[in-house]
Image (cartoon, rainbow, N blue to C red; front, side, top):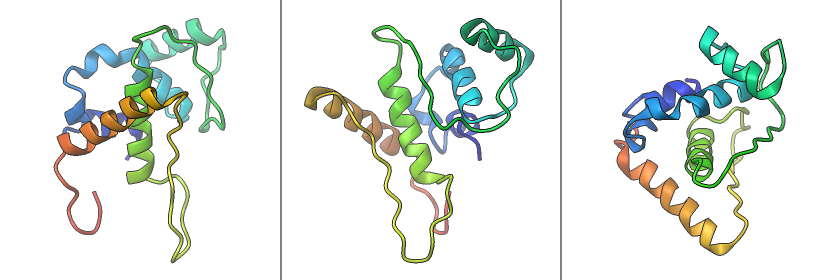
Length: 132
């Protein structure tokens, strides 16, 4: 399950994003960050935003995005945190406990992030026993 499929699925992350089509640039950024194939229209946006002619072929270790206020950064960060918790990208050894850190610049922003995470989790049906 990749992150964009999870966001489109109303049973996973999608229930918290009412009109996901307005999040198109974010979906492109997420597909690029996770090293997922880009559609032609997505590649054009990627090329314009990065100046690169070759899309990434593997997940990025770090991603830097320049975004203005009210661009949806906190909601996307919360969605990424929930996705990483549900679908860890690393295999844990028996007995290990995974931790997803979602760090904010201040307490007010941390409360906003916590509410976004809570909303994403509450908007989706609970996972069935044995996984999502």
